[in-house]
Length: 112
Length: 110
Length: 237
Ligand code: SF4
Ligand code: SF4
Ligand code: FES
Image (cartoon, rainbow over all chains, first blue to last red; front, side, top):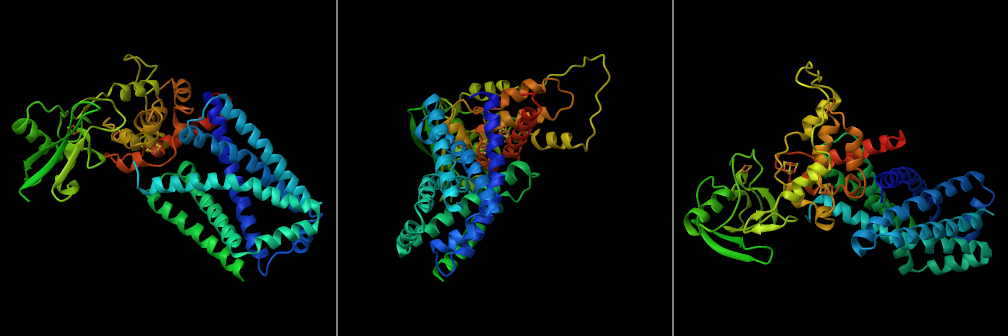
């Protein structure tokens, strides 16, 4: 890939990483708080349904994941599986789309 | 060159990242079950309420916190002024991730 | 211990180890042991050295599995039960015995724009460089490189990706990027960014761990990544 493209991926990976660091800390703290005394659907959905701040937070979280996962897998595929070239990039873009669709479906499902 | 702290930090970061990438789609699909209503979600939650799955959940949290700590190490290496303490950073990363996952395990068993 | 048992790589890439017994001496370096073998036991042994005092960078070998400058490495420090295993550096083609082909290594320095390009002639006045300026301190941290390729042989990314410029060439590019007299910075950044350049580095720090001059190529490479980012965001890459 080109010099610019590779640099752009690096910037995107670091930016999404910084965002994810915040999101993951919040997410983990929430989970540790939430699972005390077990989980029920009513409890989870009671917290999330119609909660706009929650919706925004998790949408941002998903967006960062969609950027971060494919870029992170890219060198792994190259170095461990010798998979480089166009087919790899197509696969990674497809993966990003799948993550985006599944992720937003889950967020909207829990929100609405 | 193998076996020095930097190499271990790299391996842990890479392997945890790959495993998390594999876990995420499943996680999203499971949460998407909420689309089918509370009953479907409760059925899923009931399934998760067994020791093996709980252990798995704890593993995921360990992976997540390990990947987080490793990522913070890289961000610090690349963006903060260079310090001699980079070896302790790998150890610090391990410590932080262990602490977080222990907190989770504690909450899980209560 | 009066005898060192030394296994030395003989032949090319498909060669093998040959055992020698070398008398143990006080303050003996690994290079002393190799030199003893060549002078006394087998004059056909091929190896390189020049300065013997850690300045020329020609004597690096793999000693008990670790890349080291042999002239400044004491046998005391590295021998295990009086045994040494000495092989050529990893990731470089073996010419014969302990001698590796260094051309590819240094070609990468030029590919990384590791050459000073100034604009002044000898009729111009000297450029003033403030000794404590941030840029000059960056240069300071990386400039003492002796080109020994210990870092290069210790890097897993080099071992996996033959195109990767490697820690030494990138460290050199970083010292020049911080040289205020140099006028080829845009070309240099284009040469070092990308997946054969600084973005291939995993910050594993094998190089930094092993550099005998205490240089941290990982830090220099991180500097290049930041510089590439700034250039990209400014539309100059
Ligand atoms: S950076 Fe260090 S290890 Fe690498 S070539 Fe220079 S002196 Fe040798
Ligand atoms: S820090 Fe980068 S250049 Fe140095 S050994 Fe690791 S991957 Fe190679
Ligand atoms: S012989 Fe010159 S550095 Fe070792």
